[in-house]
Image (cartoon, rainbow, N blue to C red):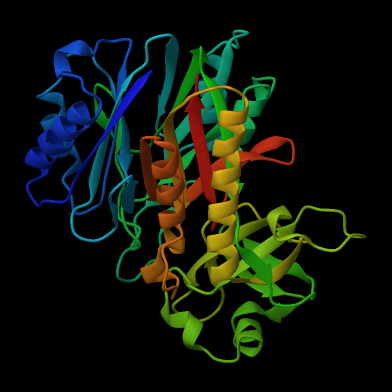
Length: 411
């Protein structure tokens, strides 16, 4: 396998596609004509980039049969760039060689995510040499307006649909795609077309040996457990019978958190560890708070998968823990690949858009820790800031919030 990464941040979308592709081909010491239908291009761009024009700019430099996968991203991460302002865009060219990929695609995700997950799984088998599945889907169901909050496509039923028709043997990683923090409409590059409201699954097989780890970084405000007492979909109204907005005001000590979308310093956590043991931050599944409802009656959760009766805790982001988790876990993973006698060929990083320093009141970019480790080990890196990060967690693949998922393709 050979990989090359190209970055662009210019306002001319079609030219950005050409520029990023040419940089990626140069980085991989390849030409466009050396790629075939057995290879692939991964591409992502921010909401300020015209996705269709960007796609056609890439397409203009490739043989017609080469598939392009990807779509919207809040920002992008490469070995040299870390960008979520202006017109960020990234392209990775992957000469797969002895690694093979099969693609499943469904449209009209907004109608029934559970059914879409089932349909994705039914398009694929589970050969013995399949080792990784990459799931990308549109996070935004209905974009936000001046008067209405966004409505999102949930990851939980999509993943549940996948599980219905698969053994769960093959780990699934990926992302719910966002183009900006304003929850604008999102796009996907689905091989040879540009779509909305779709989900696709890339199943890798052959010589690929994947290594993966998740980065966390939220810690509880205290040990107080709250029971969800009023919730409807992604709208949470009360905890322990108390309206949730004034409850958070009281715990947080001010109403200032209400001004942010998404909320920068607060999240909800569901603890998945042994309740009889001391809590560990890496055993929380966190749920990002997109914001308070305009009338103050409740909060909007990014993932609508919590239910009445569940126990949650109020969480705060810990910048030091976030940085340490990214640095320690990525270095440990890359050292493991080296110790196993394998070669790391390509790295993917799916990073929550809320973890970007400008949105988390942090002086340091945690993604820079991933950059540094990939550069130290000589691994080409493509990362995106996204809405939901998908990774195996406690026995099955789940949608995570405020996390980073690091995946390395090794041979």
